[in-house]
Image 1 (cartoon, rainbow, N blue to C red):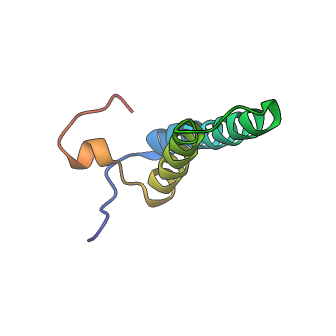
Image 2 (tube, one colour):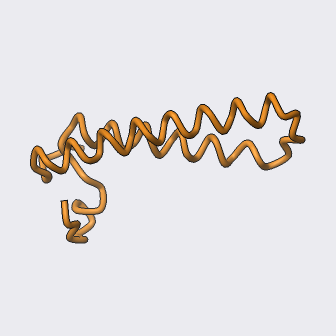
Length: 77
């Protein structure tokens, strides 16, 4: 699969900022859950999903490719 660039520099910068915030939020929430001694059960999916989303946003920023735009949705940035 080839990832064709479908976002401009503004979109890349926005996705990079969002990705960094997502990674930080996921790591902080995971650490908070561990330090608070919360029974994990299925709760581990919350920090994992936030961290995964942040990592994917950074991937989009680095490649210049947006999944939503590739699926045909028009995004403002």
